[in-house]
Length: 151
Image 1: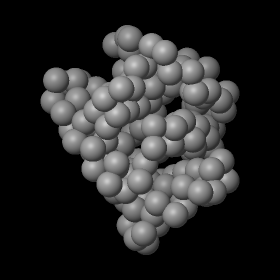
Image 2: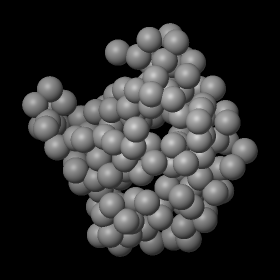
Image 3: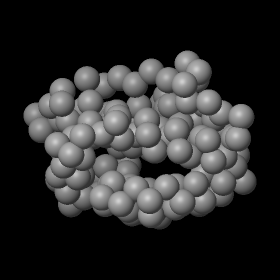
Image 4: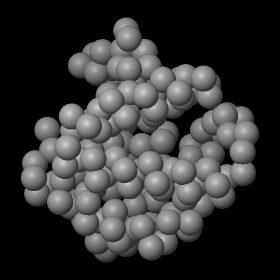
């Protein structure tokens, strides 16, 4: 569970990344495709416009940490749409790792161990909500294919 302090770390650190959103999105996709080249086939549109959508969606999710009752249905709907794009249950892990790498790169020294931990907890919670919505048989308690790095 995310503490109030961790939520604040996530929200404040995202505010520092938002001004470099285009660069952050480019870093994210470059690293994502390095981690898992097959994911590139899921993106049919221009990556620059996709990056803008990514950063906007991340902003909504980060702000939504203040009201989870409103955020969860948005994440669930997004997850169901991602099924149509060909996203699999395992694709969330390289996404999380690419996000952590992007944050580490964009925040530099501000990506402290406690900031990293707050983001890992946040992303895991988001991914679990989305996986559960998209794949009804998904059980976060038994899912073992998740390793987040970039300390």
